[in-house]
Image 1 (cartoon, helix red, strand yellow):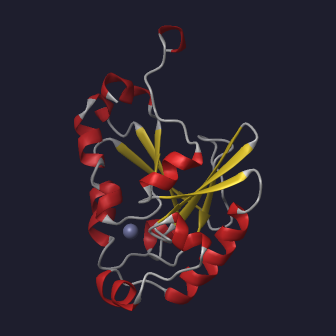
Image 2 (tube, protein in one colour):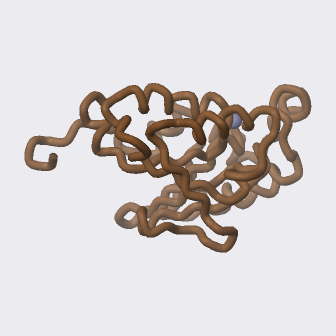
Image 3 (cartoon, rainbow, N blue to C red):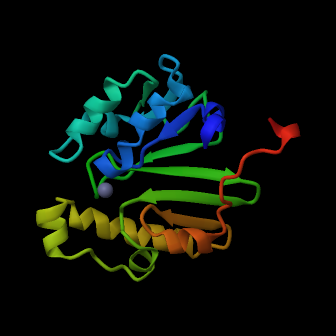
Length: 187
Ligand SMILES: [Zn+2]
């Protein structure tokens, strides 16, 4: 984003696995590094409950010079800082896995993180497999199944689109606009 990174005022993490959080170091080293300038919204589960694969990234965020962490109370799913943005605890993939709900014009975008690794697996209710879910990335497989069914039903609705973190092809197909620098009169 170059200089445009200064326009970013907040961050949301679907969960605290290293591949979703490590970019914060580059962000803080950039021009956005003014002390605690970036607000990160966390559910209380994401803020407080960690496992072997999320604890280090929780520390990374706590010690990050450019991030101000805000923990939402259990019954609170929105914030004063980002009105209209919904933040919901999911669990399943990690204890603190979180859904971000973003209404834009007449469409609701749901960012589901790594509940599945592909959109196809979400729509078809495919589990990731025992080796993945028990050995590589310990997950709550029962909860994951509940979430797949629920999210697939939402995705089937006309004005709702579920976005899966690691499925770039599905992301492009979803119609999310690619980030582009603003034109001069929009700066
Ligand atoms: Zn993950």
